[in-house]
Picture (cartoon, rainbow, N blue to C red):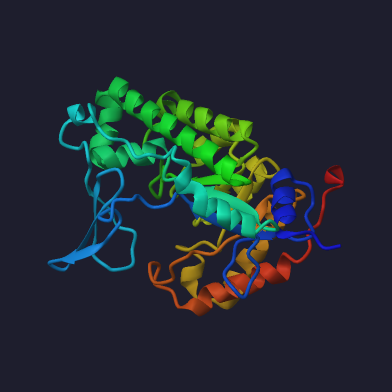
Amino acid sequence: MSMSSREIVKRSLAFECPERIAMGLPAPYPNDMVSAGVSASADPEVGVWREIDGRWLMRDEWGNTWGRLEGFTKGEVTHGVIEDDWDLLDGYQWPDLANPARYQRASDLFARHPDQYRIGGLPGFPFAIARYMRRMENFLADVLIEPERSAALLQQVSDLLEDCIAQFSAAGADGVMFGEDWGTQDQLLVSPRTWQKLFRPGFEQLVGAARREGLDVWMHSCGAIYEIIPDLVDIGIAVLQFDQPELHGIDNLARDFGGRVNFWCPVDIQKTLQTRDAEVIDAAAREMIEKLGCFGGGFIAGFYGSNEAIGLEPWVQDVACQAFVKYGSSLKCPPEAL
């Protein structure tokens, strides 16, 4: 009897030899996961992009103003809600993330897909949310100049997200996922020591809360974060989602973390897909499966959701999807995993 998609993912995460690699690909290829976020704020002005003088602007639920030039990219915060003064945090109205009604859509979706692995999408993580509220350049300075205020803000966000995790558990999620970009193309945004002192406690709190609820934790991060991967694995992150796996080195990831964490990746979006060479793309997909997925699990095939944003024609990622299906149809299970 074939395994369900949910069982394939859970076995991959546990390194218990699923019948094939887990996949998160678009139709007509396999997608073993279904995901839902927190329902939108009741405020009709939140999350609406408007074009003003050739520029797109939007206010998010936290009160930050976002801007972008094109009509399809994510954009970036152009003005944080407490950017102008730390004292604006006094009396600040936090989003209501503990309201069960905001998880009803997720609950309904998860109930309709019992055979898929169900992921609750967190609305950020402490650093990502804090840096939006203060804006990136300010908050990176705050980390050094105002460490106590920074820590207090991070703690408030962590407490709020802990409520969110509990609500996703009640809604029937198998895991929760967050995105928090921690690196440039060649280094962390802060020193490893600063990360461990100021930011690791929030990771420990939230990953611990999720695991007590029986939830796996999935993390997306862009950039060169190799220096903190040991911390992330030690804390209990189950899946690391990288769009640039070759930035870290496939051999390095396999050597240092293979069999300890799952990697969910497309073929590298900045290096390999950009070659538009079908043979090179095919080989890269096979390499990740063979090197990262050879531990009775460990690799999940991924897809980058916006070809426009990375300047690619759809056929390029189609080559990668076909390779993932072709080479991931069966897995070699190491003797120790049997």
